[in-house]
Amino acid sequence: MAKLTVHALLLLPFLLPLVLAAPDPNPQAEITTTSTTLTTSSSPSTPSPTPSIICNNSPDLCTRAYNNITHLGAHDSPFVRDPSTRNSVAGNQYYNATVALSAGVRLLQAQVHFSNPSSSSSSSASGEGGGDGGVLRLCHTDCRLMDAGRLEDWLGTIRVWLEGNGNEVVTLLLVNSDDRGRGVFGEAFERAGLGRYGFVPGSTSNSTTSNSSGSNSSGSNSSGSNSTGPIAWPTLQTLITANTRLVVFIASLPAVSSSAQETADSQTYPYLLNEFDHVFETAYNITDPSAFNCALDRPANTTFSSSSTSGTDNKEGTLAQQALSAGRLPLLNHFVYLQLTPDIWIPSASGVNATNSPSEADSDVGALGRHIKTCRQEWNSSSSKPVFVLVDFYNHGPAIEAVDRANGIVGVGRVKEPVPSSSSSSGEQWNQNQAWAIILASVLSAVSLAMVWYIFRNSRCWVCWGCCGQNHPEGYYRN
Ligand SMILES: *[C@@H]1O[C@H](CO)[C@@H](O)[C@H](O)[C@H]1NC(C)=O
Ligand SMILES: *[C@@H]1O[C@H](CO)[C@@H](O)[C@H](O)[C@H]1NC(C)=O
Ligand SMILES: *[C@@H]1O[C@H](CO)[C@@H](O)[C@H](O)[C@H]1NC(C)=O
Ligand SMILES: *[C@@H]1O[C@H](CO)[C@@H](O)[C@H](O)[C@H]1NC(C)=O
Ligand SMILES: *[C@@H]1O[C@H](CO)[C@@H](O)[C@H](O)[C@H]1NC(C)=O
Ligand SMILES: *[C@@H]1O[C@H](CO)[C@@H](O)[C@H](O)[C@H]1NC(C)=O
Ligand SMILES: *[C@@H]1O[C@H](CO)[C@@H](O)[C@H](O)[C@H]1NC(C)=O
Ligand SMILES: *[C@@H]1O[C@H](CO)[C@@H](O)[C@H](O)[C@H]1NC(C)=O
Ligand SMILES: *[C@@H]1O[C@H](CO)[C@@H](O)[C@H](O)[C@H]1NC(C)=O
Ligand SMILES: *[C@@H]1O[C@H](CO)[C@@H](O)[C@H](O)[C@H]1NC(C)=O
Ligand SMILES: *[C@@H]1O[C@H](CO)[C@@H](O)[C@H](O)[C@H]1NC(C)=O
Image (cartoon, rainbow, N blue to C red; front, top):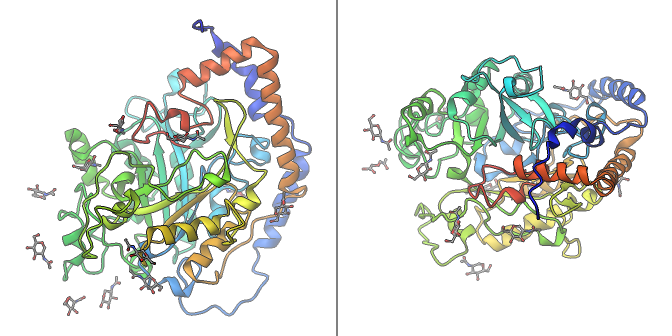
């Protein structure tokens, strides 16, 4: 194949509208209806007798350790398919982060890109905070394709939510797509006022001052250490009392020892935790619901030394079992892609009711409930429940029911999402139409093909992160 070094960027304005700005059937009506239903539904219409203390939507979770709870996660949470994006096919959720939190989601995942305004056509970046004039933005694969704004602005909305919901513990999982250091992330957290809520392993534990069970096992030096050892995760109540209600994982951060700057920043921002020092994940490139599994996919090529707390050395177990023995928190990736072409993958919305279903029945292949149950059996230990499950379109299924079942709770105090007028099904129709429009455009025009090729080769990839794996085996890029 000849190298198509076409100046494809010139054509971006023509293809982009297909992706991001396909016509919406009735945007005005949807917006107004959404806002009215929101105001009516968010008023406390059900006068429930408030039980004593509720943590993360249940009185039963207060005394439970953070890692003995299954947290529902919204995959690519800033990237929504709603009127604000004209139902973009690149969107993974129907509702934004704060609506998701109010509905019970407790982990928000997002891709973060470093955008240098001088090299970008986007005029919205103010240029502060990046050191070299750039700024961290929430972009889906590429800031030219889907840009959900500055990281710190999004973090600010989460801070407001946290401050309005003082008994809730929230986890963030940020993908460091452009391999930036701790400093630029830490600055965004501090400017958003979120840093003060960050959980620091070993220092928030109730036992820090006296009994050293927490600090001893979590890598000795409490501030800024590379605590790759298992963290003694506190209970929700301990996190709430200490008001360190935000757990922050980043995939991935440079090694603490890689430079003096990183060493210093790890002490300035000790709440920024390197995801794959503490978490392991199942495969994320699923196109067929029957392919969900419980095997460790990332971190790759890592040997796990058993923490020996259980006494059982699990050397002959699966990698996942070894990781569990070493105290890694398991994350189930549970979302399906629609593969349009070998290179173009978009979040699949059509089967999401079945995908996010709480059903545990063996016949419901691909259901979230079944996936969770299967992994608990396969991992074969009482302490090895999935700690995080990451889904697209979290409000379908509903996914929260599968998570409640895993936790053995009945959720209280959640706020239902506003119901859009024509509902997500009509949005989905448009999504499919957009998808076909993309294909059509690709087929009709060799130039478009060249451009798609350009995007995928030069910007790594667009919606698909599976195709990035070869170049970034550590998982810096993911969807
Ligand atoms: C996890 O929570 C369950 C339910 O409260 C409890 O029975 C179990 O002992 C806990 N496991 C650990 C390891 O604390
Ligand atoms: C999230 O969406 C809701 C309604 O869908 C809206 O009222 C709210 O302002 C949005 N929040 C942010 C931070 O954009
Ligand atoms: C510290 O540990 C000892 C023995 O393990 C226990 O008796 C004591 O109650 C603990 N103190 C606190 C404050 O947890
Ligand atoms: C903490 O670790 C040190 C060194 O590994 C060990 O000597 C000490 O006994 C430990 N303390 C506790 C309370 O386990
Ligand atoms: C802990 O801190 C001491 C001095 O502050 C340092 O010598 C030691 O290497 C640190 N240990 C780790 C594991 O970072
Ligand atoms: C720490 O433990 C003590 C006694 O076990 C308890 O009184 C105190 O409330 C706990 N503090 C936090 C922050 O959980
Ligand atoms: C922590 O140390 C481990 C092993 O030395 C290393 O593989 C990992 O990259 C380090 N992580 C960070 C964030 O420095
Ligand atoms: C997902 O990735 C694995 C490992 O890289 C690969 O073997 C598998 O074929 C991929 N699945 C799909 C559907 O591309
Ligand atoms: C999915 O479930 C929602 C309710 O949760 C329902 O309105 C919708 O029709 C269902 N979609 C399909 C394709 O079954
Ligand atoms: C897994 O569980 C089965 C039965 O539940 C038991 O026979 C087997 O020994 C367990 N394996 C491990 C490695 O714990
Ligand atoms: C893992 O090991 C395989 C085989 O040695 C190698 O091909 C691959 O590049 C390694 N991946 C990483 C992330 O180191």
